[in-house]
Structure formats: structure tokens, C-alpha cells
Amino acid sequence: MARFVFRRLLSMIPVIIGISFIIFSILALTPGDPAQIILGDGATPEAISELREQMGLNDFFIVRYIRYIAGAVRGDFGLSYRTQLPVLNELLARLPNTLVLALFGVGCAAMVGVPIGIISAVKQYTLIDNATRVFAMVMTAIPAFWLGLMLMLAFALKLRLVPAIGADTWEGFILPSVTLAIGNMAVMIRMTRSTMLEVIREDYIRTALAKGVSRRKVILRHALANALLPIVTTIGINFGLQMGGAMICETVFSIPGLGTLIITSVRQKDIPMVMASVIFVALTISLVTLAMDLIYSFFDPRVRMQNFRKGGARA
Amino acid sequence: MSEAAVRGKSQWKSVWIRFRKSTISLMGLSMLAALLLISGSAGIWIDYESQAIQHNMKQRLQHPSAEHFFGTDQFGRDVFARVVFGARISLLVGILTITLSLAIGSVIGSIAGYYGGRVGNLLMRMMDVLLSIPAILMAISIVAALGNGMFNLIIALTVSGVPRFAYIVRSIVLTIKNQEFVEAAKAYGSSNSRIILRHVLPNAIGPIVVQATTNMANSILLISSLSFVGLGMPSSTPEWGSMLSDAKQYMRHNPYLILFPGMAIVTAVMALNLIGDGLRDALDPKLRN
Image (cartoon, rainbow over all chains, first blue to last red; front, side, top):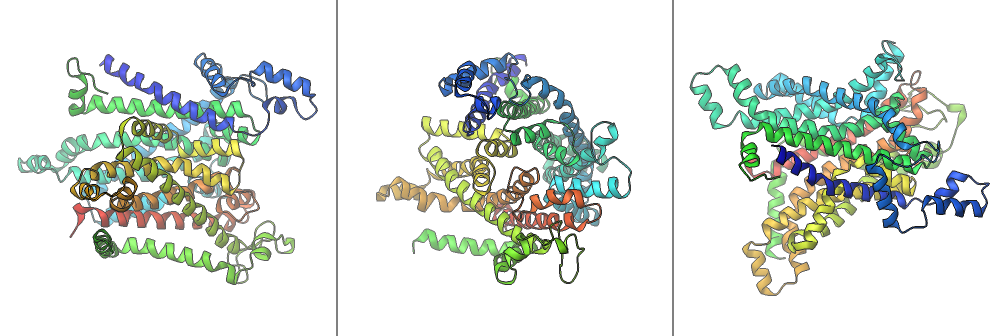
């Protein structure tokens, strides 16, 4: 087991290098001299060239990349152009808000979406099923930020039940979390429904029913147990989308998270901040995907046998 | 006409017969057709400059009426005109993005699948990495580096669209390249590029079209999301996302300002999703008959 986990972690390294290299290369294309940006318009050419030398901007691209990664491994993501403070501090201060939003969004969506998906599959083509499918279809087409605006208009501005913006109190998180959860729920419902529909047509389900096992037990013990794996994978994949959705939602509700940080940093041309945040979010997503992969192989006996067979750890 | 082309035609005919059985897919198709028709002909019956661009402070923030179907915004511009011209931008950027990602993705996927080997492996590992960066982050990084505007937006969306097409084309090339008709074409002396273009890619069209509709729906969502946070189209352009962003501070007393552009996004995305679902079912051999 430990060996398998270790192997999967090792296989992450090329992905991490790839992600950071692509983001680094893209952002290196940014026009404008960082030294000029930091020193402002009034700076003398001498001061600029001195700062360039000091920041190592005259080195080859690949040298700068390696230096950046070497720093990043030690937790040094450079200084913000805007505040001249370490980027990592700001990042870590903002991270919890985004994580809370994303986790709450995924959690709520799974808790509500999976049962609805099961009911919809079991009662295929009934009124409940059709209503659920229409709901899911419409919800996947609604952009999170528009849903957020509509909910804000209804529940914060008109009904005054919750605050419209800000993260000062826990009530401020209600609307953004619900916004994220609803969009995600649609995906969960669709996924659960289609997986369950496939599973309940399997021979072993018919066998169980023929043996006289109650329908309820067959659905919960036989069908759901087998349908759960693809559902877990969807939750993992969704977490990535959720981070993206959370970033946009933060803007709607003015929540100080990674999303608002990235967006304001892009506007202010604060490249080190953008770089670190983007790499950070991409890595978080890769790690979650990896975790889901491990959970998957832990729970699926077929995959488990392959991976944990004596001596033969396969990634 | 070659035999492959004839067979291709009859295949599409049967796909269409199966597609049209589903009312809901037809609904999607008519929604998209309506959007294309209205936005395509908008230049004829709406004056872009005076209705959608020029400020007209005397008429600002008017509620929907017979004169202004969707009301007017904070600068007195007609919201209906802006929503209609917004469709042009979203559809245009969406179509250009899909075409570019498809072209580049097909080349990469074909090379990786047909020739394989080290180059193929390297290309697909690059695609893996691109795919592991969420589209929105990739787009934000590219906009951060290049600045916003339509051209850069297309580049940003294309880069994140390429890997999916590369994957599809590669997997189909892999299943097809050893089949007899490809062997026959080789024996005939057809060049590799001819085999890929004439024999391999036509077989990949089904899954590609399905992916293209989904991708286009996602592109439309991304364009509006980026414009909403101020990283997409410049705010004077009638784009759905930037209209919503402008409308945010007026929505309390003028809710129609956020209602209509949002509904436009939902309509476009839903139409494409419905078509995509319908095509997927129509192309699925398991669901035939």
C-alpha cells in the first residue's frame, strides 16, 4: 500500500513540473519590465538596470525558471510587485475562504445530488425523473456568477435574509456556497443517474432480486455500492471545476479568497502573485485528483487486487 | 465521389433520423437556429452604433417597454440590441475557438496516434499537463500575460480546448490505423497525410462533433465569466458577461438588467448542450433501433 501511494506521488512530479513550466512560460510573455513596474515611471535607467541585475532578470529564461522552482520548493514564491511582501503569506491568508467555499459546494452537492440521482434512476421516466432531468439540464447551463447575482437579488437585496457581500460573518458564506452547490448538484445528479441506470441493468442485480432480496436492499447494497466509484471520481473532478467556480463566485460576493486575489493581481500586473496563485490552485487540484484516485483504488476490489498484488505495484 | 464519402453521407442521414426522434434535441437545435438567425440578421434591423454603443443619458435605466423590449442600461443603451449583438460575439468567439482547437488538436492527435513513438508520447504528455490546468486558470494566465480583448481571449480558450480534441483524434487514429482499409490505402501508395485526412479523420467526426458542441458551450460560459470579472472583452463591447458586470450595481431597482443577458447565456449554453446530448445518443451504436 505504502509503496503504491509513494509511486503515485512520484508520478505527480512530472505533472507539477509541467504545470509550473507552462504557467511560468506564459507569464514570462507579459510585456513590460518588472523592474520598471516596481520602481514606477520616475525611475532612472541606472536604478532599473541595477534592480534587473539584482532580481536576476538578465539570466536565461530556463535559469530563471529553475531558480523560481528552487525557491518555491522552500516556500519562497517571491515578493509581490505591489506590496513587496512575500507572496506566500497573502496566499495562505486567502486560501481558507476559497477552500471553505469549494468544500461546502462539493459536500452539499454530493449530499443532496446523489440521493436525488438515485431516486431519478430508480423511478426512470416517471414525473419525478423528468422533473429532475429538466432541473439538472437547466442548472448546468446557468453560469455560477449569474445564479449568484440572482440569489443575491432575491435573498439579500429584496428579502434581506442574508448579507449580500463580504466574509466577515459566517452568514456571508451562505449565498456563495449555495450558488456553487446548486451548479455542482446538477452535475452530481446527472452522473449518479446515468451510473445507476447502467448498474441496475446488470445481471447480478437481477440475480439478487430473483433470490428474493428486497428491492430497497438491492438498490442500496448491490447497486449503489457499485455505482459509488464513478461518483467518487466525479466528486474529485468536480472539485477542480469547483475551485474555478469558487474564484468567480468570490468576485460576485466580494469574498477575499484566491479567486479575487488572482483577478485583482492580474489587473494590477502583479505577476509573481498571479503565478504563485495559479500554480498553487492547479497543484491543489492535482493533489485532490490523486487523493480521489487512491480512494478509488482502495475501495474497488478489482483495482485493489491489481495494485497491491505482491511485488507488482502498478500505477 | 469516393466510397468512403458515400458511406459517410448515409451514416449522417441515419444519425439525423435518430437525432430528430428526440423532441428535446430538436428543441436545442431550434434554439440555436433562432440565436444564429436573430444575431446574424441583427445588422439589418438594429443600428449597432446608435442602439448598442452610443450613450443616451436622457433614456437611461428605463424599464422594459414596447419601445425598448429589454429596457435601457445606465447609459441609455438599448439592452435588447446589446443582448442580440452579444450573441454575435459569444457565437463568433465560440466558433473560432472550436475551429482552431479542432485544427491544432487534430494535427497533434493524428501525429501522436499515427506515428506514435517518442514524439507521440511527448506530445500526449504535454496534452496531459495542459489538461490538468483548469481552463479558467489557463485563460486567466494568458490574459494576464497578453492583456484582454477578443483576439487574446480566442488564444486563451483555444489553448485549453486543444488537448481534448487531441485525445479524441488520437484514440480514434489508434483504433483505425491497423484496419484493412487503411492497409489497402497504404498498398495503393497513398501518402500518410492523405490517409489521415481521407480515411482516418472522417471516422472521427462523430465524437469530434459531440466534443465540439460541449466545448462551445463551455467556451461561451468562460467568455462571459472572464468578461464578468473584467478579464475578457472590454466593458464597452456588448458582451453578456460584461453587461452583467456593469448591471450589478443597478440590479436592485432595475433587475431586468441582469435578467436578460443571463437568460441569453443560459439559452445559448442549453441549446448547445441539448444538441450535444442528442448527437451523442444518435451516434451511440448501443442505442440504435
